[in-house]
Image (cartoon, rainbow, N blue to C red; front, side, top):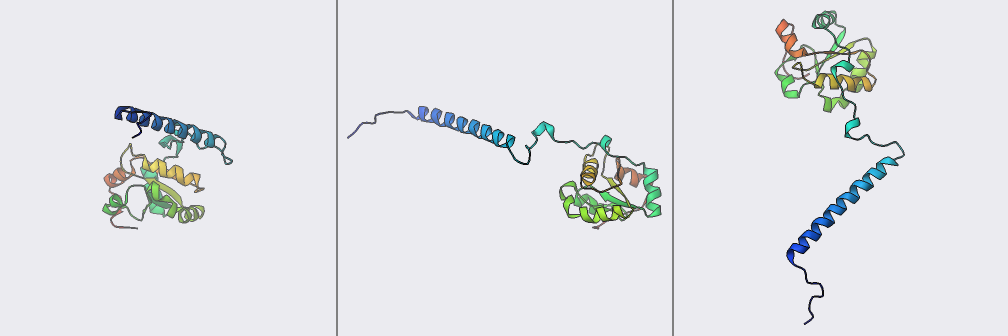
Length: 168
């Protein structure tokens, strides 16, 4: 019976496996960074370089001006909240376009905006990032005349302006 030329204890095997895993991860990171740097279409931005949509980047509209435009019929209201919140209540005639699902409605919204409607995006809460994020996305996709009502849903309800429930 041949003896094992390299006797290994189980702890040595475990340590060796851990080091091999660490080296494979390091190699993966180096290869990914290298390929990202030589991409023909340009490198993909690292986490800290993604653009951040903020209320300062988007033109705001006052509640009074939004109400005036609502009465004139020169506005498309876009609710950036989730579908369940939208079904529970929204500005009368508003469309529900959560930022993650905006691709389905871009063409329709762009056509209406190019025909002269002002697109007013809103969500719920003064710190809600969904409205500015959706407005930024719409602007980047070529939708003209996009505005945001900060804390729009709460303000609209408190003012007693027309609301409805259900889907668009």
